[in-house]
Length: 152
Image 1 (cartoon, helix red, strand yellow):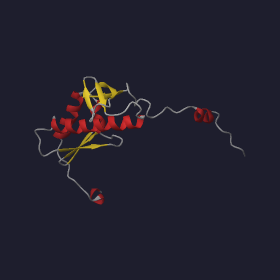
Image 2 (image 1 turned 180 degrees about the vertical axis):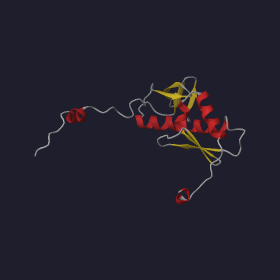
Image 3 (image 1 turned 30 degrees about the horizontal axis):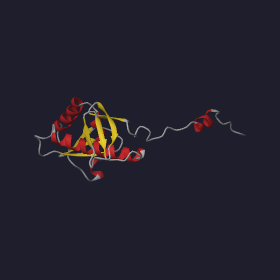
Image 4 (image 1 turned 120 degrees about the horizontal axis):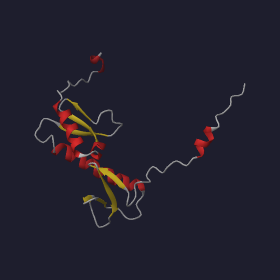
């Protein structure tokens, strides 16, 4: 017996998939502390940096979307680590901050003396970031367990 194919399948396959790095171009915008920064390619700079509402990246005008994305995300990750560690957590020397890069199950999670923060938390407005860090830092430290079967 012959199976009939869904007529929608060929239509889905024929559509053009959006370019994944399309927004990563000069003049593109990215979220930072609840605001948007405009990406500027600047060959006069040696290091990326924020100037007002612009993020200046030390890249040539012909940089690819991937190069722009890598430079912008590297700057965001550095900013996140510095901001998270030096802000709300400055009075808590026992806590360290590390950044997580996978799919966020939680934006901030405490693991013993460690706060694991998803690096894209930096895109949220500062009051939300501060509240998430404070809440996680105030949680009692869960015991660290490296033995998978001890939890059963």
